[in-house]
Image 1 (cartoon, rainbow, N blue to C red):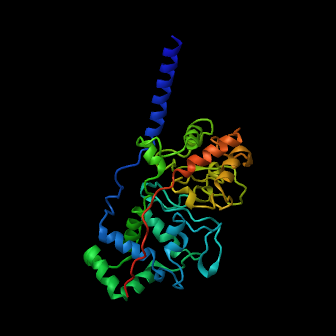
Image 2: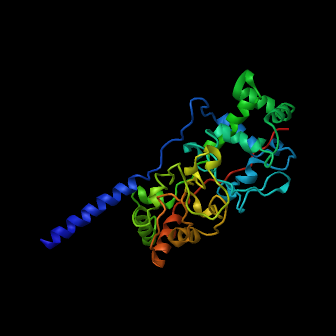
Length: 325
């Protein structure tokens, strides 16, 4: 009787664990909005614009300056660097898996990727140029005139089509299959036993999954996680005191490529991030009710870190586009 009970318990545990894994299955297609459908030529044009310094006032910055494919589509600095070599107030967020995003920037001030694409270009502290001037610059280039006509027909080069092209390219930036994905699909050898224990902690005792949900490991919401910072975050956009010091939950995909971490780049390692949730957060009135003190052992911290490391995919190398002249 005892053996039968143990077998039943193990079977039930396996079913629950499998259900947990099923929440993280990768999607089989990239969503593109009906207002800006995908085409290969539009994505190729957007890639050129993404890497073209002519989209900055002094021709010294590109979108890739802050969203570098070599650093998980971030920039590996504590805070982004903008126009005139000025340091900005926040770390560059990744554009990986942006096609599944709900709102954009750390504070969610852009409702679409098209709107997001315009923001840094026109921001005085970033690329510092109006889209109107960008249209003038690109219109002087025969190669761009031909490409825009091919993609957009008679509307050609205009502000809306620039935004659409960049956003289309950004939606194609998808994290590659990771060891974790192969494990979810049934390959038990794809990740270590430490990582499997870390996954259980992630979904259980550590409660990481309360914010880092789904295959892209984000709830697309805003939380104050207790980082010591003067930045009021989402509240600057909404004016709602409940949003004070709240920032969007980042995806955890390709996380090992994306140090430093947090909206202010204040943490250098994944272990430092985990320890923050154990004992390091600021207990203030705006702190999210999802943030509760954790009691994790050193082994549990190591296991969580091992799991997070399985989320980095095998991405294809990005080649630089040949820019029209």
